[in-house]
Image 1 (cartoon, rainbow, N blue to C red):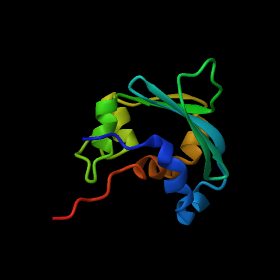
Image 2 (spheres, helix red, strand yellow):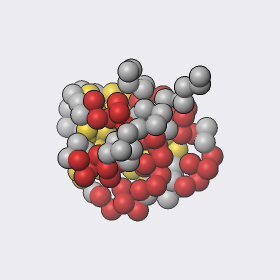
Image 3 (cartoon, rainbow, N blue to C red):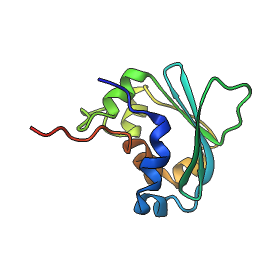
Length: 126
């Protein structure tokens, strides 16, 4: 199972006008740690302005999500198994760690969930 390319988030999210509209009140930098790999995702009024891959020296970010690569690989399956289907399921399992200013994260929770789910691989056809 290959990991989706986080660097493709601008194309995936910005092409989805409903998703951009949902995040229209969010301007922030989200740090995403997938195992040892770190990304800074700049969000400007719901659009993904930039995704940068680390390593970083003293990065500045608003809120962060950190999760082992194997747990996110299961989250990004077309139909994730129970316990891997949602960010809060990963949090409850102890796989996901949240950090930073959680107010913008919680205020835009559905947007963040959909941004992360946009990296799910398409459903395979028989």
